[in-house]
Length: 386
Image 1 (cartoon, rainbow, N blue to C red):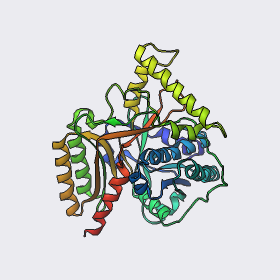
Image 2: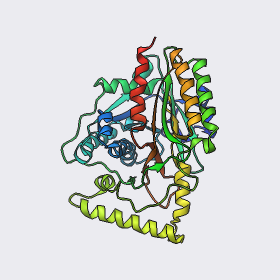
Image 3: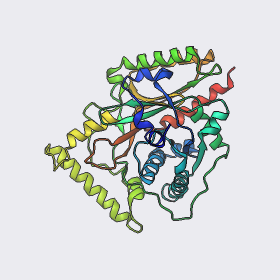
């Protein structure tokens, strides 16, 4: 693969529009030789969530993607958001830059959010030496937003190495700040409309990703697809614009210049007031149309994904949630899968919006009261089963 193709790797992968087709390994392409995975997550995120810091935990996870994309100067490296962390794949020649970004980010998360972020950079070749791989598909969530899907077992292995303390990135000097332009946390939690917001993780069981596991994934996706709009947790016309103050602190800490935190908070509040007023009047200002923007928010959101496992945060009624869990219990008891499921009344959204004038803004969806982090904790119990 030539240098141009390696750099543009993700752009050259064919789109997969139908989410169910992502269970097919033929939808995926191996990462180019020489690439690496940049990974980070919040240590002890469960305890932080129990203390009510779920918004800060999600902000930390989204900040990993924001800082890396801004610092690397390219928006189309494949990435995945995991609630309390994230992963991004990039060419090996960008490793030193990525290390600096992650080193700076760990300091900012500690000083601004009072959380501990660990980070690692894992060479894909080391993953392949174990017999695993990192395969990537390109799912088109809307006309304006595409998301990377990962398979092959490599991302899970890399995350496990990070948690062992291997491939670690050392924190930068105190006071270091990454470029978090575009990181936005202004939306209120979005209440369930069908019953509950269900955050679900389904990973291969002791038999690995065999045909039975792939069949299980197809069944799960089919059950969820019975719900209107595939259980999408956001209204079709987007989340409501409200005069909220819940996300101001996190966003201000991400984007304020040194010594200007209060002024940045006031600026964000003023911008929010203006957006609410424009939305109420229904009159676009320049190229910004709030009603169209809200629709794009819903269309562009990443409420379901593959990352060596199926992850969904969906709005389901009681009957479908019960059927889903009954099927998963049978599959997990048979060794076909491991799973974690967490129910809550609201979804939470954290965003990366480089420009209000572009349509490719991305929105990371999680449960508002633990979401993927608590689902992951429940998933671990199946490790005790044969």
